[in-house]
Image (cartoon, rainbow, N blue to C red; front, side):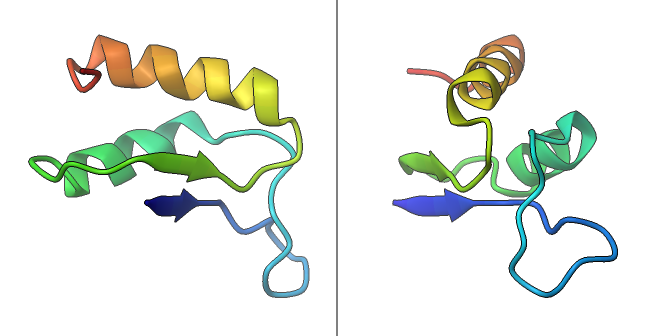
Length: 64
């Protein structure tokens, strides 16, 4: 299990962004290529960003 979050710019440490940053998420996926894990998003708009993350992962051929 991996918790994924993006730091909200110019905010106190640990403050998550409102929605997923596509470019940062794609970089994360590229850097973790070949690993098998479940992913939990730590983000404010959970459902909306989960759908975006799923689509990005699917487009990169990373969903089982």
